[in-house]
Length: 77
Image 1 (cartoon, helix red, strand yellow):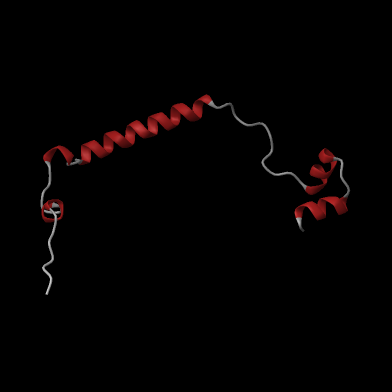
Image 2 (cartoon, helix red, strand yellow):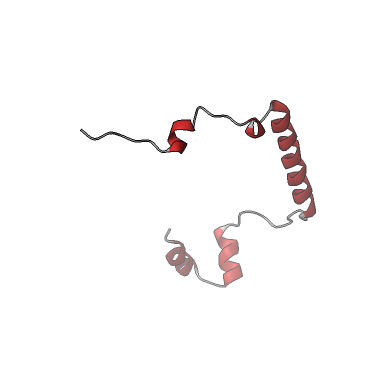
């Protein structure tokens, strides 16, 4: 019968915890605040969008200058 051998890493891994890798609730809260602050800063740089999000099919056909049949073919509706 073969002996199963473990590497050094496998023997020590979940049992060994390094103090430098511990994260406190304060650390999490600080990271959350930094992330939120960065997101707010990035979003405030973007100009507000004045365009509509959705267009009606008639508006799209008019913009592309295509017929209702062509639009139906292109969209697969």
